[in-house]
Image (cartoon, rainbow, N blue to C red; front, side, top):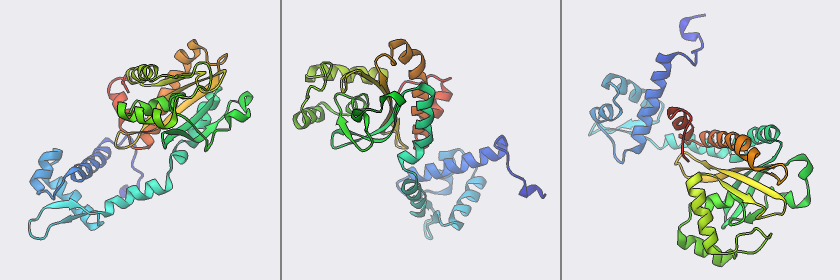
Amino acid sequence: MADDEKEISVNDKPSNQLVLKLFQLISFLAKSKAPLRLQEIAAGTKIPQPTVLRYLNALIQEGFAYQDEFLGRYALTWRICSIGVNVRNHLTIRTLTGELINDLSSQLGLGCSIVVEHDMECVYLDCVYEPDMMGPTLQRIGKQSPLYSTSSGKLFLSQYSEAEIDQMIEKKKLRELTPNTIRTKERLMEEIEKVKKCGFAMDNEECERNLRCIAYPIYDYSEKLVAAISCFGSVERMTDPYVEEVIKPVLYRASLEVSFRMGSNRKNRVKENGGLFEI
């Protein structure tokens, strides 16, 4: 087998550096509001001009970049957008998280969900149930739940302004679902501040009796909170020690993995900080 036909190892550092530089170049061009000179691109990316020129010529050849005929400056073409469109069309959140949710449920022995926000309510995109909790109240996929009484909902509310929270209260009301349901704006604001500080949210029998739930945020490539991943189970099962010692570390790592699949860089930032990262 010829050398150029050999499979490149993932540990081939020179090859990895070349690929990283190419993505660095593309990212730099994508952030520019106008075409750039070769010298500007090299200075901005800290990549030698000959290497930059080689990458640019390859991108032009494939239709992903162009050089202005008169000014000689470079920019990306809209063809680069087709890659993102294809990914979003074919890889939904459910597609990206399907096997992970099943594995998480099996590992923890709890129900697990992927939740998004729509019209100031939680919508369950996917849900795997704890075997002994298959009651009718837990048939959640496609169903909606209040933001103020669910762990995932509290995460979404942590992104709201106070005016938006007032609007939600006016529109949805703070209806009592259980004796533990939050019923006042003051108490809700306290809970939201707590969520902002700790980076996750809890539901302690606030939506359904005998049910506890914990959720961590999922971020996309723009570092916007777009979904939540949660685990839920009976009060007897989800004791404070089990939540603190077992569920939180596992669910946190799962949230980072899903965010990574959606383009967030938070997982890499955790590695850079030795495993410590504040959401």
